[in-house]
Length: 381
Ligand code: HEC
Ligand code: HEC
Image (cartoon, rainbow, N blue to C red):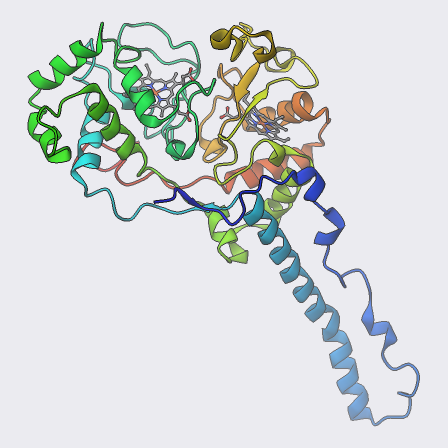
């Protein structure tokens, strides 16, 4: 099963591909009415004149609408090529593996302090992220980076701010001794046995003689998280519904493409696909006011060329997942957008430009998946 429906994965550079004047309605700024009634059209009946007047009066409107429709078409074509769209999961939730993953995700007992679940730092009311700058793990320590949303996250080729986990299963397995606080993976497995999880693991992995393993714990969690997709107004627009986006949002989408945001935030998740330097034209902390300077991927690779490299985050649901950046240093989305324009693109942005990009980003807000709650419950706020 493919995670998304993308029409183009060529990764074209939008800065090159983009052609702003092409988006203007082709006839809009001409006035075809002025050509009416010119040569050879003088001596006609009143009725005919009236008719011509009507047609003449209507023509700009008709052309205007046709022009706008084709502008929408052109924008849709570009959006489909640069981003593509995502779809909700319809099947899947019923499988025993997903059901197990859901139970594990919400179970606070599967942690060293008996009080911490995955959902403790990926909250429903925060759209699968955490509105605190840093979260508190099962050992009582603050996390070193901000908790991002897990919605749609299984579609990324690597995970976390440093892109240092290959898959959802990889991420979940290391959580056992990380956020969940167990001294060893075995200690986590022992807890699952004590909590009578055997039957659920057997249902999910019937071929395994001894199904409670760190690998299966991780696989089940990844399978559940893969069901948490949040299609939004943007996807409806790409699918053909012009009215899904407001004019302001369409303008914001054009700006997002034309100023170069899409150069990094591309693909159906608007990011997640690459690692880039944060602060290409200016040190990021000068704008974010970060208290601590995080060296990014250099921390794990120990290579100087990896300094300040972070994974480009997805922007799906970004309007709901403040605070922003790897250290949650920025509270407002408009500020985050302005900072991006300054430190990544060297652009000063007018308030109106920032506001239209923010309006566009709001079109990436989907609904909280109905299964984002403990088994048998509905999401709570
Ligand atoms: C103590 C809080 C906390 C708990 C508990 C926690 N997480 Fe996280 N999660 C985080 C933080 C913080 C990050 C970002 C870490 C980083 O990038 O350095 C993160 C990152 C992730 C990511 C990567 C998302 C992305 O887009 O890269 C996934 C997936 C995830 N967590 C799933 C889980 C699962 C599954 C569990 C339970 C096994 C879990 N988390 C438990 C705080 C937590
Ligand atoms: C050169 C690549 C690049 C470009 C261009 C770029 N970004 Fe980013 N963006 C990133 C990276 C990397 C981060 C993560 C920075 C961090 O916190 O470490 C990020 C973070 C963000 C965030 C914060 C997301 C969150 O969940 O915290 C937003 C919002 C954002 N970008 C929007 C934009 C907008 C709007 C533009 C265009 C004005 C843009 N970006 C241009 C690479 C880029």
